[in-house]
Image (cartoon, rainbow over all chains, first blue to last red; front, top):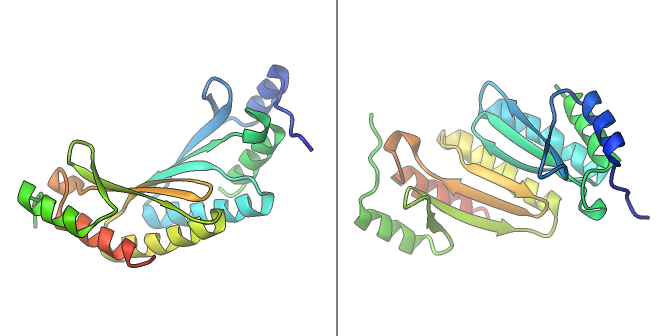
Length: 96
Length: 96
């Protein structure tokens, strides 16, 4: 089953719902940067995101430098943003 | 206690010892890309690297996309590569 790319209207609605995430890659991805007290807290968060990613079978493109974690979400099968990204972003935000 | 940047000769010797790591950032860092079967294996590796990083109090700059992990090591206090990076690289390689 193909996963549909969000229409511009759906994308705007999703972004309005996800206050801290911003559009990236010419609208093909959403990104958010998270800052923690130190590496231990940052990696604890990453571990929880990894468990989410496996359970949703939807994996982030992400990087970490000490206490900072940058996460980008996109859906390759959709060629851009899909409902899976919005759902994953909400689940990540719910961890905080 | 200040951490010394490796001299060019020391850097060359360290790199010769670390076959899979390459110089990056104009000689200020070393990098290696690791590929695994899937995200689960990649993140399991990242977890082991995170434990190493905490125990050595020396943290990587790294990114992950599904089964791939890119790690860069540099020592900010030394303004470039130090013995801590070579030591960390060897410890990471020993995980494999």
